[in-house]
Image (tube, rainbow, N blue to C red; front, side, top):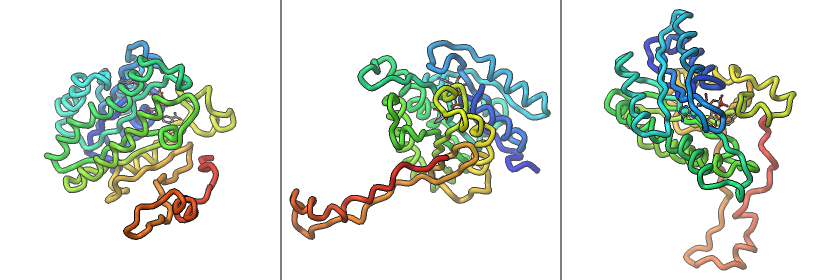
Length: 286
Ligand SMILES: NC(=O)c1ccc[n+]([C@@H]2O[C@H](COP(=O)([O-])OP(=O)(O)OC[C@H]3O[C@@H](n4cnc5c(N)ncnc54)[C@H](O)[C@@H]3O)[C@@H](O)[C@H]2O)c1
């Protein structure tokens, strides 16, 4: 028995890169998969989905069950159709991985409104568009698991990625709310910050890491997230860089509280060590 026997998974942006690896592994573990991808270039400027059609075919020729769905997740109407496709083909949905994404890297001042809107539309609005109907269905039908894709850029910042980081940080915030709202309905929600060599990153990663961080290395950790192996965890964020798996969390300083007084600037200066955390240096993803 596979770990996902009898389950139905919707994976957005599964025509290539990370999404394709999740689709292939989930299918090998017994899941029926809705392989979504709008296709097009990494910056989202053109369309066409042959790669996702090929992923669905690859799954079927290996004896699995999969359908192709070409919805643009940024379009609310098309995104609604994803739930319908899953229900029409397989009767239910147990897993959703919001993975579709584009990049338009430019320094902040060079980021035109059209670039900002396009990136936020696919990542943040796309996650909302696809998740809302699926979440509603799961709420009424015994629960499920949702994995939303954020990024280290969104949580820590990265030069030239203002639109992307804003969208990805928004997804992180949304995921916490979904985990809270989904808890009593059996809906578990994860956030994933991946780093892998795909068409989005092949020119950005140092060559020695690019060779190691192949997307198939991340897929088993995502399988863990969506399978019963991770029950009852929810509301957590995992960073996956190649084979390295680590939880990311907000931390709070010890805190300074001047009793019933309103704190003064001088009190803040005098209690610096209680308010701020020591500098720890960058997170070691390698
Ligand atoms: N590769 C990394 O190191 C890395 C780092 C941080 C975050 N991510 C995130 O991981 C996810 C997967 O990225 P990837 O690296 O595999 O890149 P990728 O380009 O290989 O995959 C993204 C897929 O999303 C599809 N897509 C784009 N717009 C779409 C839309 N409107 N509707 C449906 N599908 C659409 C693309 O056609 C593409 O196949 C993205 O959300 C990305 O931001 C990746």
